[in-house]
Image (cartoon, rainbow, N blue to C red; front, side):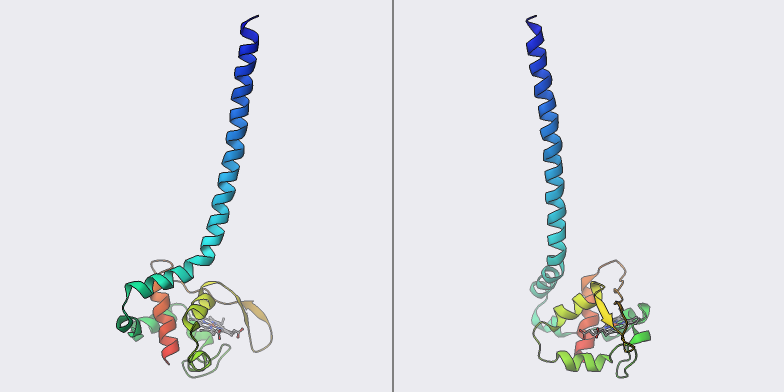
Length: 153
Ligand code: HEC
């Protein structure tokens, strides 16, 4: 008789703990998901900021033209973009012209080739723009080099 309530209390306490642990776990997971979602939005600007801090201005201006072209070739960018010839997409010289003197040009274009945002084709249809692939994956230095090359044209 004496044991009954104690056992019940213990069980209740155990169940309560288990419940709160599950709820806590869920909350934690949701918080992690939110964090990952938010951090994805921040990843690119932060990476750019990081590169800006790591490389002094001189090094930043230096573009590896051959590496940029090679990455563009591997990604079939030239199927839709000529360097100076308009195809389905604008010529890269026209892109450089459009963004000349714009402060956020690099970040804007990195976003353009990494996010799969909608691209409008000359025939009026829209589809997700090609997302650049690097080896190793998501190599921001290679992506940045490609965009810097386009902007330098
Ligand atoms: C299937 C065709 C296609 C491929 C492949 C393609 N693009 Fe594009 N790209 C387009 C089109 C179409 C636009 C115009 C988008 C718009 O104005 O809405 C565009 C626009 C752009 C722009 C200009 C964006 C702006 O804000 O003005 C850049 C830079 C660009 N592409 C780079 C690339 C790079 C780098 C690659 C390869 C990784 C690539 N594209 C592959 C079709 C393509």
